[in-house]
Length: 130
Image 1 (tube, helix red, strand yellow):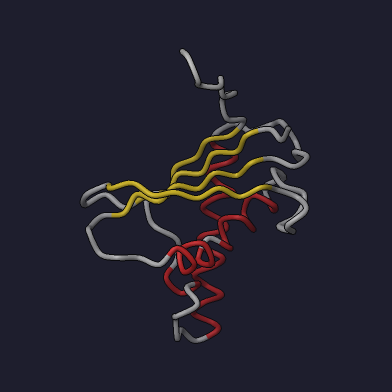
Image 2 (cartoon, rainbow, N blue to C red):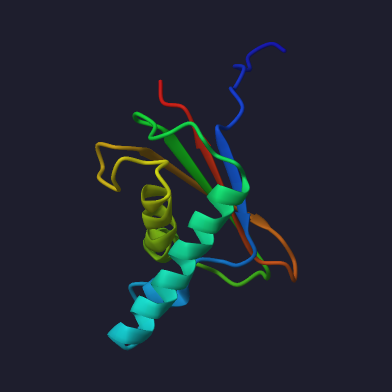
């Protein structure tokens, strides 16, 4: 393969059968208790999927966290809203012991999207830092 770098496999790979909670979009007008409940559900979903994946590598130093959204339709979506709505997913990675903190110094984010007609999902892959 000329011109392509070999990429290490992810340390952790989890799939969530939904997009991030809409209550965490900056445009949301959800009541703070509704927002809190949605955040707890999303965070616990990530914690459960990390445990189910058998993750045992401990807290990673400076990992790359790649989040890909499988969007179910052709509607336009704002990057900043999707990124902000992922906060409970990142909090779940912290609580599950994958990330030290959700601080800018503790991980490198990467985002993308793909079409996933009638099957919205979020794919999270964590790679060792370099």
